[in-house]
Length: 428
Image 1 (cartoon, rainbow, N blue to C red):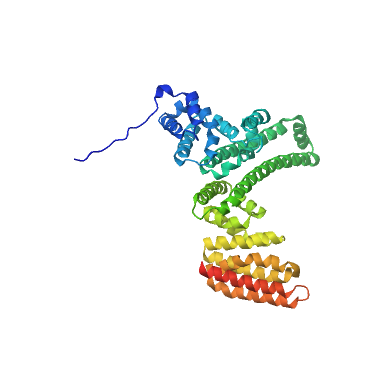
Image 2: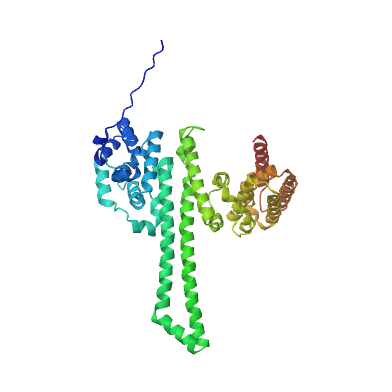
């Protein structure tokens, strides 16, 4: 006879759960996670309209998810409840979320009471208007948010909302200023003068039109600067910290970093699709080269870089030229097309010219970081190995000719680096 044992399903009584009790149980997440989990499960059964009274209870306890060790089940329930509330009370939810995730102002010193005292008396809550005027405030949160994928997902939703609101606010203010400028007596007088006299009035009317165009261009420039600053901050989030470098491959911290990078890349792709000009702006600004494998493989819209790589390579700054070659190597490897092979050939021609233009004292620092990119281009298109060979032969001749200004040690280091990169490339 087979006997089956059934585990009873433990649920909270709906009559005993209210916003105060829910907050009390959620605050015990680290000490008594079972009650917190049961509370979240109960709230997940409610319709979105019935969750509104629990908004403050959920947002005020959101920082508890940043405390290690985190529970994935609890995090997913938090994200699910937050998403459902976002469809009912979005503005209130965004504002309370940003204020809840602010870093503690008391720093690392002092006890819990002192930190709470500082938190109450030094931090002024953000307002909806201040967040619209400066969406970067959303990213001035607790640094632990950037290593908690569930909370980061919520933060990126809030950031996208306030960025869109800020853009609409700037456009509305620009339109209002244009309407005011058209309705002022000075504008009317200028229009009247233009109708009475042809030359002077026409000049004043042209100046007024230029002023309107300048306001619109300023609005576009402010929006681009704001969004590029957000992108640069999110790219810095993807950099490996000292703790990330100490983590074991495919360990918990390693997986968290990969999840964070996936969320950031998805967010960047949405921005680049909405505003393709930002792709060029961000890459002309530059960022850490070690992030190129992350962005090229994680952001599908990075193929747009093929349109301006040669323009970036033609910039006078050596660091921008290096970044252009490294960017081209990763993008071409991701998209090995006949068109990209032509770009790679042009890059080798440009590098051959640079062997004569770069000063002797800078050749080593200029060409050594480019060796992995050159090897990557040759691995993508093997026929380019001849161009790479000609480049290195030309570089070695230039170094030997200028031996009195550049010691032979740089040539030896260049030869050793080429050998190491070729060996590493063949093994991978």
